[in-house]
Length: 199
Image (cartoon, rainbow, N blue to C red):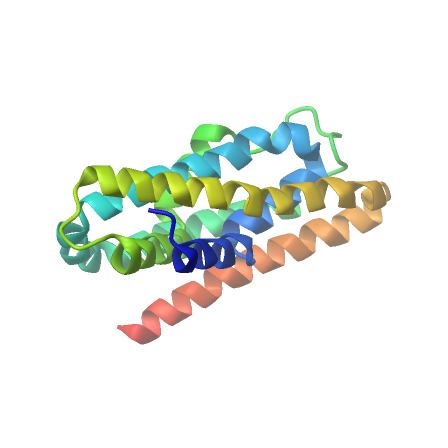
């Protein structure tokens, strides 16, 4: 099922800024790449599982999604705002004893309340799943999405890890964390406003 338009779409959606990539970059800065790997893998595997399940149940999902769209957006945006608050309060890279990066399961589950992930998954399923396909085609589609998604999002975690070299100053790190928090909060606000205006 290798499809150049599919790969182009997945690369574009995976590598552009969004909640996952902002959180991965921030985790790279604050915890380094190695400690961010579970978060990274959770995003990619969670994305693949979401593609497979949504593509497998697309007909039912489209009807159901319309009824839960607003609550899903509110939950997702609330979580983004909580993450923004947590990011704004982050300290020196590796400095806080109780601070830890987002784990595999939390990152995988976040995909279910991430509006950008839903948009990406629905578009992939609608545009690239062959008509009349079964779960095997959905699983293949999910595998291709994960294989393309993982290196794209890894760029953000690696960039964050490399940025941590310049973040040794508490003042610089504070500016970075507040900037990342503001971007997450702005993303949540933009999504909520867009959703409210579309109803």
